[in-house]
Image 1: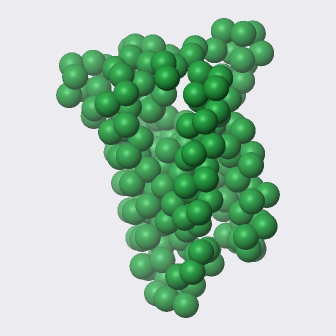
Image 2: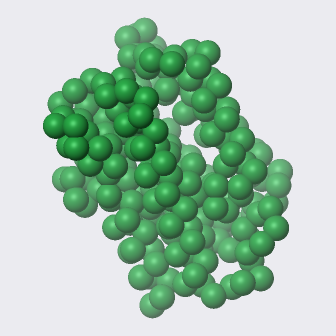
Image 3: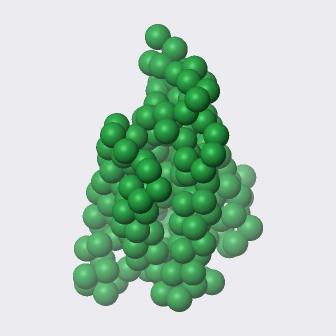
Length: 203
């Protein structure tokens, strides 16, 4: 029962969309400006770096909390510590935080792409990979000015690196599903990239 509650709570927490909240504080409906996507990149394009940073941090914290709830519910302290969390419940609960971000119950299931929240999951479960993923995303955005390219390359690199550091079994499966969800949520971006019409972000 604790594990079920952790998963449900992670989804609900994931459904809190900081892009919507921050934009509303600025008097803006994030769904009606820019790409319409309620995420860090669109906030950066439409509201600037400060609000975008607030959204990135808020959405990442959702992933951290989700993963933590999984560990807390499983009551497996031996799986926590060191450089990698081995408790697969941390990854499953984190995955549901990402699902909540992508399909938020509070916003008619119109959510973001899931990148920042998945980053938060990694920061809790595999801190070095989480930090590396953040650095890689920022570098690619700086070079290409296209957030979707940065996101897709970063998540593609995450899988083999996670495997290399010892993420196995169900934990690796949940990471794979997280990456698959992010790629699926970027399908429109991929179509625009192919057409050459993907919007760029200021850097």
